[in-house]
View 1 (cartoon, rainbow, N blue to C red):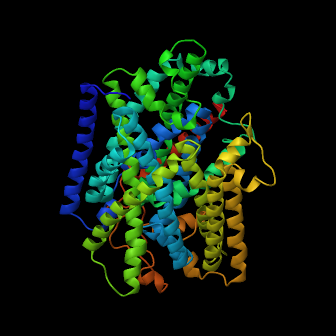
View 2 (view 1 turned 90 degrees about the vertical axis):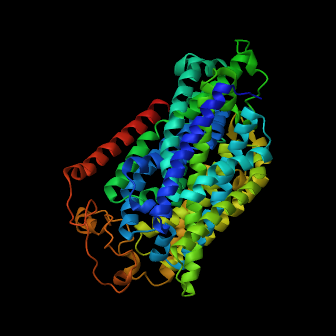
View 3 (view 1 turned 90 degrees about the horizontal axis):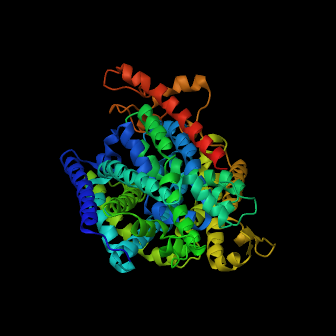
Amino acid sequence: MGVLSILDVVVVVMSLLGVFGVAMYSTYKQKTSGGAERFFLAGRSMPWWIIGGSLFASNIGTEHFVGQAGTAASAGIAVGLYEWTAGYMILALGWIFAPVYLRCKLTTIPELLEHRFNKECRFVFVIITLLAYVVSKIGSSLFAGVIIFKIVAGWGIWQSLPAIVLMTAIYTVAGGLTAVMLTDTIQMFIFLTGGLLGTYLSLNLVGGISGLFVAFDEAGLTEFSHLLRPVTDSEFPWPGMLFGIPVVSIWYWCVDQEMAQRVLSAPNISEARLGAGFAGLLKVLPVFITVFPGMVARALFELCTMNQGHSDWCSVNLRDPHVADGAYPLLVIKEFPQGIRGIMVASFLAAMMSSLSAVLNSASTIFTYDIYQRFQSTRGVEVPSKSLVLVGRITTVVMSMLAFLWVPVIAAQPEGLYVCTQTAMTHLAPPVSALFVSGLFFGRSNGQGGLIGLLTGTGVGISRLVLYFVFARQCSEQVENGHQILTWSNFFFCLNFNYFAIVLFCFTLLVINTTSFFFPPPKHQKTNDTMVEWSCCKNRSKENTVNGGDESQEPFLGEDLKSGGDVEQIDPDRSDSHGVTTSCQRKKPVISQILGVAVVVSLSSLIAYFR
């Protein structure tokens, strides 16, 4: 539809060359000082600002500029709660989960499940994770990229998909996590620059935020300006949003390899918490850079239908969720000047590549360590580092190919891209979240209970997901004035997916901890160092067991821990082999606490203001 000018193309090409330049440099460094740990965990040496930038960039993808902006165009600001509630969960990653992860010196998060429960829980979790990556992350990123290329370049689905995968897989396959995290940070600056510029230009078209809300009031869409919707709202009921989103976010932000891998790359807990605080503060921005532009596109359409100008928009029915997915790209093509279009397209591509490369790298890490190496170790085979890297690269390619098969399924759903993605997550995540919550907080839960609960919850979730997709059109027909009409006959498959996430989480939690009482309690080795510790006394006595990057520290469940022996205690902020802590390092815990408070205050204030 839209044709980029030569200036736009130059801007896009220069940004891509910059990203590839950084990626190739990090790939060269990885080859000269390589190894599996450097390929998969960046040598556990990443500073806080790269950790935070990568956490943020890995999350913000084209599905936000396409799917989230599209949902905002069809439903309003309520979708922004996904972003602002996520900030709290990023803090939970840094302050609750990261200390356990670094204390155990994990390579992958599934390892923790074997240490805390059993190998069966670990294997089931890996399968669920890889399935979720295909249906909710890789597939949605590819589909969003298809929409971008269709609007900007006029390409069809089978022209754009290979281009998207090739652009991303080249440096992901070659450079590993170091390349991914460094390019994530560069891409973050690209799409933040473009995103904030897009916000400024789009809001100017309607007279700012106040003008935007006035336009919706005139169009009879008063609910568009409110974050918190009625309890019976078909898409965004406030109880489901405030309590259902955190259930899913426990997995997405706290126990998913894609995000947790960033804190696993930290040299110590201070760097991990600073990175989490930085990422949490950045989560203030997505509503402004994706949601508001999508709402502006819808406002321009409504103004056109009311004969108040913007005649170009009357031909685009943004009331249709599928059409609305193209709201932001259409806004760029129709309203932005040359040069700025190039910056915006570069931002879209940067967001797409950062999120896609992150999930591909995480998928390869999980498959390599939790399936391939685990299987080989049971046969007594020691896998060399080069073989692990090769398997990881092959996995990256295979996962990309599998995601191709899911793209047509997303395209066939009556809801928009973002809602479709969240629907899949809310059916797969709650059992996993319940398992980790049980493992980290309930000492009586054991491997048998964990496995039964995980399998039962996952079975219920997948069954309901299939029914939800099968009866999606029927449920959409039973909506009156935005409120879902529930009956005993349609309750199971028409209940809002965020409500269902709460129900499934509580159900799985109950199954895990009830069935655990029918089996012997876990041994001390299963709960030692694998649970969250709250008391100040325990924190003081245990904080030195967190690995500070010293190579003398044994990995978790090394021979000393297996036999119950003592392990040298190492300060988490140690900067050298002598345990010397600089004044700068002593200040980092204080700075991270201040940053955490700033995140909570900022997000809470925004939610209260736009409620």
